[in-house]
Image (tube, rainbow, N blue to C red; front, side, top):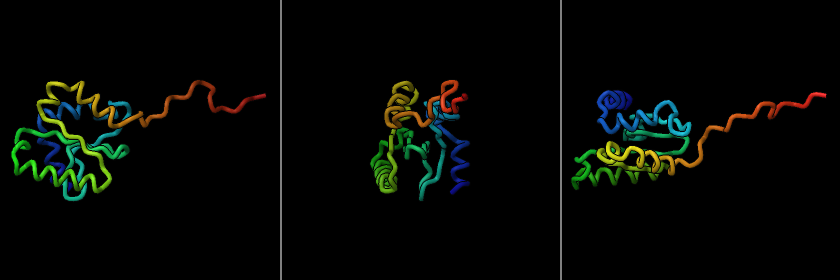
Length: 127
């Protein structure tokens, strides 16, 4: 499975690449994302383990009945594993990146990063 994930990483769509650019290196409010991450029999486009959030970026082929049925089975499996699934169309990511990022931010909730301590906060008082 990891070989397949590795191959998918090198063959990302433009939309996956665009979204990954905004999510990598904890760029979205400090949340850590992985790309092409295996879960059970599936390889997820993007995954945030801390939030149990899966993000799938779908091309036009996902609009056909056969692929839609596969996506529904896949989503049901992921939900049964306690994961939340968000799906975006390629053109949605490319044409409304800010809106997509806001939807992801809303699904994630508050940042996992603690706010930096103020100087002196948490230090013992000296007499």
